Amino acid sequence: MPTDVSFIIAAFNAEETIRRAIESALAQEGVAVEVVVVDDCSNDATAQAALDLASERVRVIRLDQNRGPGGARNAGLEAACGRFVAVLDADDAVHPERMARLLRRADETGAEIVVDNLEVIDGTGGSKPMFAPARLAAMPEMTLAAFVAGNHLFEETFSLGYMKPAIERDFLERHGLRYVETLRVGDDYVFLASALAVGGRCAVEPRPSYAYHIRAGSISRTLELHHVEAMLEADAVFLSGHAMGPAAAAAQEKRTRSLKKAAAYLALVGHLKDGAPIRAAAAAMRDPAAVGLLRLPISVRLRRFARPFRAAPRVLV
Image 1: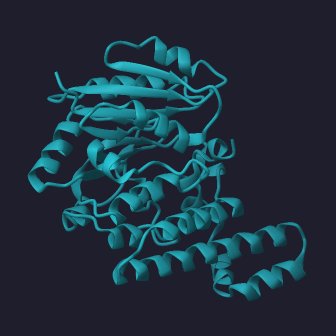
Image 2: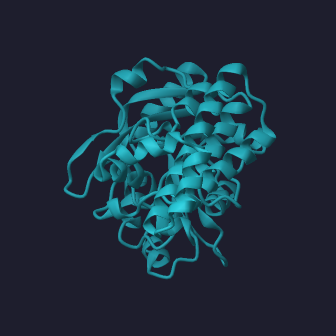
């Protein structure tokens, strides 16, 4: 029986959650799936936990050196054989109806890419949609301009970059699309932006069926200056390889300003913490708008900055 979907799970030190992720992928209803788990040189029992579930539908690839999330996903893409490939993080899960729903929408619209809403599950078990369903319902197709515009810092807690796409494998192969392995932050953003930039049509499903788990204690994993610098680097990689229309270029200009403001703000805060007022003043002069962010209550700043980097320790590998 042909495989409809290949789930790609890049795993690093995920022994506590990898089984849940795999089992949720296997529980998909109405579609034939395979699961490709790529263990990125974990130093815990992640690989064994995945191997315990190995079967004709579950393959486990063990890398001989750490390649980061992008490299691990590339290894999974090379091994995938499904009509569509779907990214699933090792600490998340998917609802049973998800892939049948997404593939149906892709077939109805002729889209090569399809994304959906996410269910955010906090450490207490509470949940809510990541995006207002009405907002996504008003955007049946996501363009490159809309995607870039939905990835600006300071505007919302969650950006559109959190979406986990399912992409037609033949489309990826025709365009030679892969993750940029040198990027440890922003590689998933560049991957989807690149797919849109080469003409991929992206259908949007407003109902949430991807379970995004926020681990307890993630508030301490705040945004740091090197994270923002990495995102600027990721954008530079993307822009060097793709042309943008006027709407997308305007959205990118605004995104770049938001990233530079974040970098100036974080440099300013760092200098103030280090007791270096002259350096702080220089950072403020480079981007005066960053000074205004100091008026935000610390709890607000942490809420805005922490969630996108709940996996920050992984980024630093």
